[in-house]
Structure formats: C-alpha cells, structure tokens
Image (cartoon, rainbow, N blue to C red):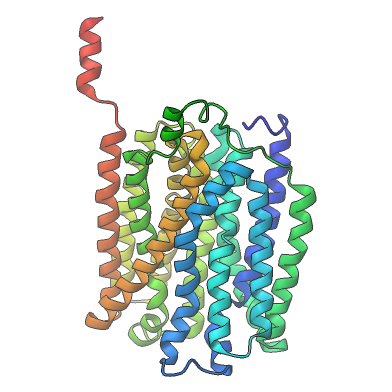
Length: 414
C-alpha cells in the first residue's frame, strides 16, 4: 500500500474514485452514440465525405490519446496522480462545452481531438488506484474500474437518447458537461493526495538516472502487444454489429441494442469475479488463465458468426462478455506488477495507448474484412485477431515462467 494513505483510508479513496468515474464516464457515454446525428446538423467539412467526418469523431480522440497517454503517465510519476485526475476532468468538461457552442463539424472534430489529447481520465484513474491500493488488491480494484466503465456503457446511452430526444443534442451535452464539472470538487476534496512515485534513489548518480530512462522490460512490451490484439478484437464488432443483425439475421434495432447491452452487462458482472479467481497468483499462472480466456473469446467470436437465431446470438454475446471481464483488467494489473515502481504511471499510460491503438486497428480490420467479404466474415476476422493475441500471450507466458533447467540445477547442487 502507498505510504501516502493510512491503513484503512485507501478503501474510502477508491469508493470516491469509483463514484467520480461512474459519473464522468456516464456523462461522456450519454451522447457518445449520437455524434454523427449532431455533425449532420452542422456546417460540413468542405470536400470531405460525411462518412469520414462521422468516423473521425471517434478516431480523432483515440488517436490523440494514443500519442499523449504515455506522457501524462510519466508526468503522474513525477507530480502524483491526483493532479492528473483534475486535469482530465477539466479537459473533459471544457471540450464538452466547446462542442455545445460549435457551429461547424470541423470545430467539433477539433474539440474531440483536444479532448483525447488532454483528458485521458481512465488512465489517470488507473494510476491513482494503483498508487493508493495495496499491491495484493490492485487486480480487484482494476476490475472494479472496468465494471464501472462497463455499467456506463450500457446504462448511459438510453438516458442520453431520452435527453437528446427531449432537449436536443446541445442541451444533452450541456447536461453531461455539468455532471463532469460537479466531479471536479468531488475529486479536489474527497480524493486524498498521493505522493509521487519514489525517485530519491534514481537521482543519486548518473547510472541510476540512465536506468530511469531505460526501456521497459520485454515482459511488459509483450503484455502491451497482447493488449493491443485483445482490444482490437474487442472493438471490431462495433463497426458491423448493427448491420449484421438487421441485414443478415433480419433482426430489429432493438435486438442490436440488446446485443450491445448483453455483453456490457456480463462483463460488468464478471470482472470482479475474475479478479478474485486471479488474486495472489504468480504472473505465469495468471497468464496461463488469460491465455485460456483468450482462446475461449475466439470461440465465442466464431459462435456469434454462425449463430442462426436471435436467442443463440444473444447467448454468444453473453458468453463473450463473461470472458472479457477477465482480460483487460488483468492485463493492466500484470503490466503494473512487472514494471519498476517509479515507472508504473508511465506503464499505465502505455496501457492506455495500447488500448487506443488496438481499437484503431480493430476498427480498420473490421472495415476491411466486412467490406471485402461481408458482415458474417467480420466475426472470422475477429477470431483471427484473438488467435494473434493468444500467440503473443503464450510467448509472454513462456518468458515469465520459471526455467525448469535452472530449477533442476539448483536441486542437484543442493
């Protein structure tokens, strides 16, 4: 546990962090699905197809976060995580209000890009949780953060749809900005300050300073590569799920909404359960179970692609969500556990970049595969992406496993 918090204070800090994340992420998710509708009402970007503009509303913030997240993580190592949470909340509220008063699609895209570059609340929350929670509780806390995010993903959009229909997009966005602004004093007064990562030893001599700037270990890099592939597979259906349901399964828009909510619900319900199953396990054992979950996720992707009826398809979505709850939160915690203490904020920033990079890759692969071969083949490409993730994670597990040869040699010497 961090020396900056009393023995029992960390639980209260985590509760407030979860409340702030639920409110702020819910406020963002309320209007998330409706940006294309808002952009359609504004002055267009000259000589650019509207489909590209609508896609840029989601690609631009992810690309900006991909670039800036490691830098914010490094800054959190130096100044502490609480200022980073306040910075993220202020940036979120400002960019939301900017969008409210924007009169052109170009202005909205610029606001969204600034939001991605300056906000990054999820990474800031993870860094704070990692600093405040005891080491043996981090996997569970990361699972709780994932659960809160998943709850916002399936609860906030219906509320946002009601607000957009009742008040219009600008007023709904204003309501979201007001909720985020209310989170700022909560963070200021309810989250205890946490000291920066210990650096006293690092600055004692030139060799130590060079060590502080050294690249992260191969195990961390391997975990990040696995995370890129896992996240890519996770977001791939976002680009084709709705048309697949309506055109291939001949289902309704309501079924598409139910399919999204089913996965988010089981992910939220299962994340903490998986964290308990993985608690206190050695890294190589945890990686073995993560590999098994990755393989099952690939099978559920194929199941979604071959399911013929609505019930079978929803069952596949539910099963997929159950497996997702044990992947990204656990991978995030493993990156922290295998990183030097003074660089854990930077490592979590890289986790955020890996997730955003994976999302961009996943959307691109989904667009390419479905454009060339059809909606159903998108699930085959999704399964192939899980296969790539499995290969990377198996290699990481082998690197993390104790070497039997050295263990046997030690036994012979004894």
